[in-house]
Length: 128
Image (cartoon, rainbow, N blue to C red; front, side, top):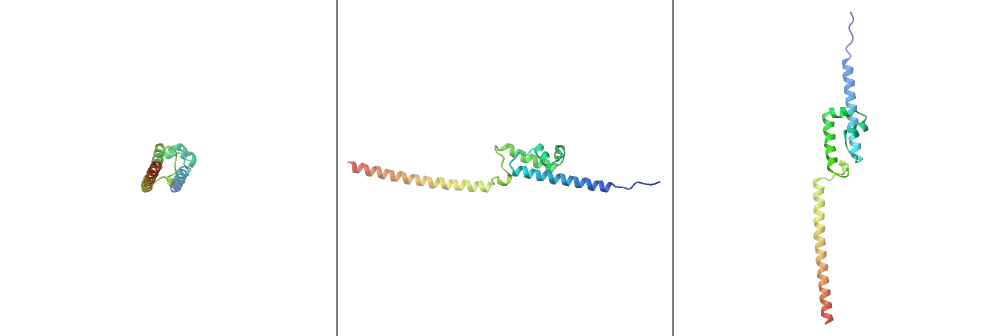
Protein backbone atom coordinates (compact mmCIF):
# COMPACT_ATOMS: atom_id res chain seq x y z
CA UNK A 1 0.00 0.00 0.00
CA UNK A 2 1.44 3.36 -0.98
CA UNK A 3 1.07 6.47 1.12
CA UNK A 4 0.80 9.97 -0.20
CA UNK A 5 3.53 12.48 0.55
CA UNK A 6 2.70 15.12 3.15
CA UNK A 7 2.71 18.42 1.26
CA UNK A 8 1.10 20.50 3.99
CA UNK A 9 4.35 22.36 4.70
CA UNK A 10 4.28 23.76 1.18
CA UNK A 11 0.66 24.80 1.55
CA UNK A 12 1.43 26.51 4.85
CA UNK A 13 4.39 28.33 3.32
CA UNK A 14 2.29 29.46 0.36
CA UNK A 15 -0.48 30.70 2.67
CA UNK A 16 2.05 32.59 4.81
CA UNK A 17 3.57 34.18 1.70
CA UNK A 18 0.11 35.20 0.42
CA UNK A 19 -0.72 36.75 3.80
CA UNK A 20 2.61 38.62 3.91
CA UNK A 21 2.07 39.94 0.37
CA UNK A 22 -1.48 41.03 1.17
CA UNK A 23 -0.30 42.70 4.38
CA UNK A 24 2.44 44.58 2.50
CA UNK A 25 -0.03 45.62 -0.20
CA UNK A 26 -2.56 46.85 2.38
CA UNK A 27 0.04 48.87 4.30
CA UNK A 28 1.39 50.37 1.09
CA UNK A 29 -2.15 51.24 -0.02
CA UNK A 30 -2.89 52.92 3.31
CA UNK A 31 0.32 54.92 2.97
CA UNK A 32 -0.49 55.99 -0.61
CA UNK A 33 -4.05 57.00 0.26
CA UNK A 34 -2.83 58.96 3.28
CA UNK A 35 -0.02 60.62 1.29
CA UNK A 36 -2.51 61.67 -1.38
CA UNK A 37 -4.84 63.04 1.28
CA UNK A 38 -7.61 60.67 0.25
CA UNK A 39 -10.10 59.30 2.72
CA UNK A 40 -9.03 56.03 4.34
CA UNK A 41 -11.87 53.51 4.19
CA UNK A 42 -11.98 49.74 3.99
CA UNK A 43 -13.38 50.01 0.46
CA UNK A 44 -10.65 52.40 -0.70
CA UNK A 45 -7.83 50.36 0.87
CA UNK A 46 -9.20 47.10 -0.58
CA UNK A 47 -9.43 48.61 -4.06
CA UNK A 48 -5.98 50.21 -3.83
CA UNK A 49 -4.30 47.08 -2.43
CA UNK A 50 -6.15 44.51 -4.51
CA UNK A 51 -7.35 42.61 -1.45
CA UNK A 52 -10.83 41.85 -0.20
CA UNK A 53 -12.58 43.98 2.39
CA UNK A 54 -13.30 40.86 4.44
CA UNK A 55 -9.55 40.16 4.64
CA UNK A 56 -8.96 43.73 5.85
CA UNK A 57 -11.62 43.33 8.53
CA UNK A 58 -10.13 39.98 9.52
CA UNK A 59 -6.60 41.23 10.18
CA UNK A 60 -6.63 43.01 13.56
CA UNK A 61 -3.58 45.23 12.93
CA UNK A 62 -4.69 46.45 9.51
CA UNK A 63 -8.24 46.89 10.74
CA UNK A 64 -7.12 48.98 13.72
CA UNK A 65 -4.95 51.21 11.50
CA UNK A 66 -7.76 51.79 8.99
CA UNK A 67 -10.24 52.54 11.77
CA UNK A 68 -7.79 54.96 13.41
CA UNK A 69 -7.11 56.83 10.18
CA UNK A 70 -10.77 56.76 9.19
CA UNK A 71 -11.71 58.33 12.55
CA UNK A 72 -9.09 61.05 11.99
CA UNK A 73 -10.52 61.66 8.53
CA UNK A 74 -14.02 62.09 9.91
CA UNK A 75 -12.78 64.57 12.49
CA UNK A 76 -11.27 66.96 9.96
CA UNK A 77 -12.85 68.72 7.03
CA UNK A 78 -10.02 68.45 4.49
CA UNK A 79 -7.89 65.32 4.35
CA UNK A 80 -4.28 66.01 5.31
CA UNK A 81 -1.54 63.38 5.02
CA UNK A 82 -0.11 62.24 8.35
CA UNK A 83 3.30 63.63 7.43
CA UNK A 84 1.80 67.12 7.15
CA UNK A 85 -0.26 67.07 10.34
CA UNK A 86 0.79 69.47 13.07
CA UNK A 87 2.30 68.13 16.26
CA UNK A 88 1.57 69.53 19.70
CA UNK A 89 5.01 71.12 19.81
CA UNK A 90 4.62 72.78 16.40
CA UNK A 91 1.23 74.15 17.42
CA UNK A 92 2.77 75.52 20.62
CA UNK A 93 5.53 77.23 18.60
CA UNK A 94 2.96 78.76 16.24
CA UNK A 95 0.93 79.99 19.21
CA UNK A 96 4.01 81.55 20.81
CA UNK A 97 4.96 83.23 17.52
CA UNK A 98 1.44 84.65 17.15
CA UNK A 99 1.50 85.87 20.74
CA UNK A 100 4.80 87.69 20.07
CA UNK A 101 3.33 89.23 16.90
CA UNK A 102 0.27 90.48 18.80
CA UNK A 103 2.52 92.04 21.45
CA UNK A 104 4.59 93.78 18.76
CA UNK A 105 1.50 95.04 16.95
CA UNK A 106 0.06 96.41 20.19
CA UNK A 107 3.30 98.30 20.83
CA UNK A 108 3.28 99.66 17.27
CA UNK A 109 -0.34 100.68 17.67
CA UNK A 110 0.40 102.49 20.95
CA UNK A 111 3.37 104.27 19.34
CA UNK A 112 1.15 105.46 16.48
CA UNK A 113 -1.52 106.66 18.92
CA UNK A 114 1.12 108.65 20.82
CA UNK A 115 2.41 110.20 17.59
CA UNK A 116 -1.14 111.11 16.55
CA UNK A 117 -1.89 112.65 19.94
CA UNK A 118 1.30 114.74 19.77
CA UNK A 119 0.50 115.90 16.23
CA UNK A 120 -3.06 116.81 17.16
CA UNK A 121 -1.77 118.68 20.22
CA UNK A 122 0.80 120.52 18.08
CA UNK A 123 -1.88 121.55 15.56
CA UNK A 124 -4.20 122.66 18.35
CA UNK A 125 -1.53 124.87 19.94
CA UNK A 126 -0.39 126.31 16.62
CA UNK A 127 -3.98 127.12 15.56
CA UNK A 128 -4.56 129.39 18.56
